[in-house]
Length: 194
Image 1 (cartoon, rainbow, N blue to C red):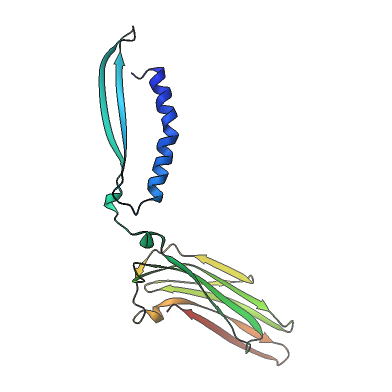
Image 2 (image 1 turned 90 degrees about the vertical axis):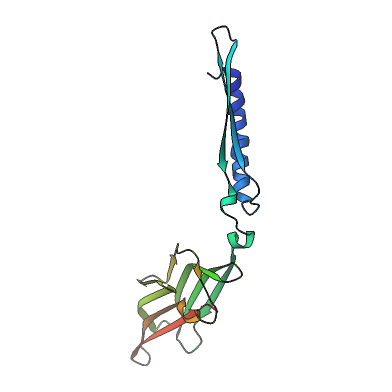
């Protein structure tokens, strides 16, 4: 049984262990470190005399199982933007957040943001949509507000800039009604990752 003094000692050490655990999580790329919890169990009789003592060791975290470089963990995160040109009577914009891993041999599209801004009161849009693709992963949604966003949660995928260029990216579009010219037509813009 643990006595009061040992219990207080363990409780005082708990924040240190928690901070050490967080430090290990931050320092994962240094795969030579580990955090081990050592527990001494002391059994005493009713007079407070020690009868037995045992020690146990438990490895809480072993980063050796995940040998990754700091670049591979954090990735090179970039934002790619694409806007419609002046030929459209409104402003359409795509913004992708993309992470590259392992010397750009893996890619992860993390999110897409889409917006349409009316620049002419006599030009309206409807049926707005966006699509997002990362090789075999794909999503397409409609939106009715002026902005939409999508968090993928897809994770990294092997990527070759030459072979996979047309399989990773995003697009958006809508139907435009131009009351000045009495015309209705659709537009689409795309944003591929190079």
